[in-house]
Image (cartoon, rainbow, N blue to C red; front, side, top):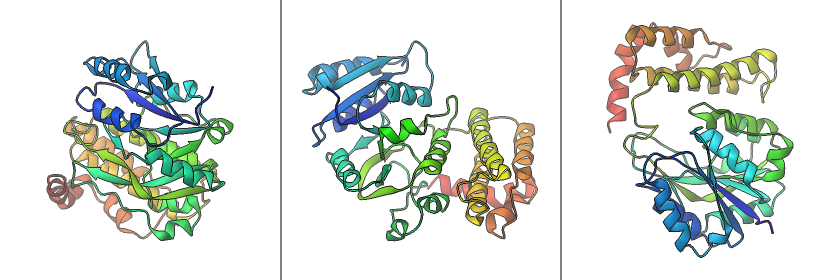
Length: 320
């Protein structure tokens, strides 16, 4: 028998956090849930903790543990979860975060009452003051979904959204494997195909920033290369005329915002200065249109001047 909702949770080296995460998922008020736990070849005690929690869980018959033969990364684990899920609705959760007790119930009730393809809810942030997540405004419900995406009016993260499985399957929506920050590209593809989204006004997800996590560690070559790949995809979309809002200045602003944030990551880059300058030159050349905004102005500067003007502000901000 199929469960109504499938919660997909990738697992990799989260022995310190996974117990809280899974308990929040197992203790949902919504009854009709299956859990797809994807073991992505952890090298710590993650799976020992998971096995104990599953053995003690009253919902253990609704829990599937899928093991990867080799580590494939977050995107690969999510794709495996989609493959094994049987629910009519799919919810992604990271294994070091937490969901509130009525998270799935709230998402399901909102989606059931609409013809939307997926839900978007508010998020509660814990562990970092230098990352800000704006609450969903009333305006977002009055404008097209694609426009609200370009204006960054809701989080692009794949988690904390309930998707109709049929919508994902019909549009062949999967995660690009091998990337960091893959959710940017995922959400772009989702809004390119979706007709509408339904909004949950409550904060149903607790996003936790841990020391040493992907969002707090030094910025690697892989991280910069991943963002360059995403920017190239968006630039190719623009050049081919296939943008989700064709020739909309909001697309240029969104592109420049992502480009600007990638440049900021270069200020804390783990590689050489030569690589740093080469990346900055690449980013400076990735211009899809002219728009008179602050991002465009700052990105026109030589990297040396950009570092002097923006570097101290960035470092102070990150250390708040």
